[in-house]
Image (cartoon, rainbow, N blue to C red):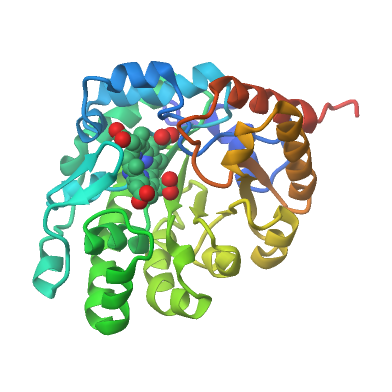
Length: 358
Ligand code: 1CP
């Protein structure tokens, strides 16, 4: 955070950064930009580190977490770092036997299907995720004025992996449980909300400047079902952080119909995928929240003039919002040329820079 060791807030520091200013809907020197999954497989320096270390183990080694988190900041000059971790890390810390399988994603040894299964998800404390606490404390020192974003998976998206046992296109088993046994569904999501809230609090106490709640797969639901089965649990997480002093970003994919409800869950910033223009999104979210997005990650694979035109359009449409954090509509694809990401950062800064004499 911004508090120096003597307890007095430092002038400048992450709280005064363009990223936090935009999250708080305050004017800043330029539109801030970072990329979801910026610390990942598009970077050769990342692949080198990860070649000999399995994913979950790399998340549990603070020196590796610190190095991988810093890589995209050094290379691209992004306005924020995001902690290198995964949404299933706190679930594993809560006692669920799972692994992250290369080329697949999270795989759960014994999927959650019954009330007894839900009881296997234990509450977590800082001691269960001490490696995250340690990594964040190191990172805050290394990053100086650059804000660090902490994150967690939202109850619906976590439940999907736990109930399916792994990645799923339809979320059929998850929805079958949700529609078939509403009481069990709420017990599962209630428990996941507790774990998520505890995990985010550890990160905030260790010094992250903002948090993002990833409900990547919430777009699989209608608005009515989202409100009935999901919103109460995501609200428990986000409203539980209302006095934590850091902006809360809430993101999902295919959530054009859910943007208003996702904002209501208690977000300061709502993430928007590429399907909804930012001016339309702002109409749905309201003028009391900032937006984050929303370049289609696939556009980065196109020739530069196409990328440039899309960045211009998004900055223009983003002006309708009371605050705009430039990002992709979902994570960086592994085949993305990192040079293009660096050029996008420079372009966003150049096109949006507001000089005092203008
Ligand atoms: O910049 C960063 O890369 C930060 C680290 C990060 C984040 C924010 C990782 C590393 N994962 C996540 C979040 C995450 N993990 C989400 C939410 C964001 C999103 O929608 O992209 C989700 C849904 C996951 C689950 C997950 N973990 C998947 C998706 C599987 C599916 O359902 O399609 C995958 C492939 C993983 C593994 C993973 N997480 C992170 C990395 C670098 C990897 C790949 C590791 C490997 O294959 O070795």
